[in-house]
Image (cartoon, rainbow, N blue to C red; front, side, top):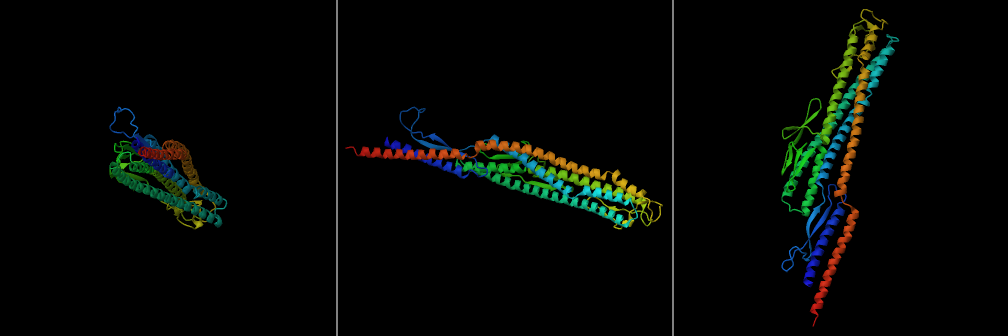
Length: 445
């Protein structure tokens, strides 16, 4: 009997010590990203021999049957899905805000209105050199603001493409690492501490990949994972120990496209999708701005050509432009502004052609179209902000649900520390009692 007590106490002490180690590991990693709480699975030690039926308790001690990783595959999948949507919304919103800033801060609308006002003031005295100089300066300011806006939009596009390229590189690095984890998982014993650590790493890698691109996963019997881009019918990113390579290509208009080992893919979630959507909007805005700049230049130049300047010569182009990026003044002498109609003679105060210049701006609705561009990007940003906030709420709820199930609860772990410590001490006391029994028996005369 004493020998049985020693065996039972030894198994209890060993199991309690391992349980204490797991509890301590939980506490130490409570703030570690991707760590999933562990618990110890205990099982009865089956003894051999004896006459007790197999279905009855053997009372031969306890052993650690497994290290249980308290993960929920469904909740983890939801966190990845909602997190991927949030990353897309964040990236798109940030890109759109950069576009809005790039246009609004240049003051194009104000400079267009300022040029129209300068033309109106010139009508008061069309031969006044100071008014003509002011009109030239207003035209120069407007053209310069178009240039700055185009340069700012180009810089915003460069930044978004740089971030997208970084995300592509990150996806490839994480995919390669996930493939290596798959190989290690296939060789690791089930329900072991090493397997639990590898599963934590696997799930963390999946979360990080999904932040960049939407994925679909399939967990295999050996706990390895197959990953596809998009849904379950998408191209394979990782299978077993093999990872495909994701690449990005930039088009002439600044938009981007992606392919996976030569197969074209269009991410619908993750930061890459957000960058691509923002770059699409950027290309549209740059195109609209180029059209506005050339339409304005063509209308003003046409009106200029129909009149005569202060010296009586035929009017020449006021602007040169193929787009917002290169629009510029063609001359800087205010006397060359064609305010008078053809045939009026040098020094004419006839403002008929000046009215045509004003009509070129107002008839083409240049200021109104610029205001429309600003309104479009501002309303788009406001809409995306609302959508992003909604998605963030959903993602937070999914993360909270997962944390409640798999995160470390320090209060619970503190209770476990006391419980397993007392179990360890109790096992030690049983060994002491067994020793005393042995001494008593040996001392019988």
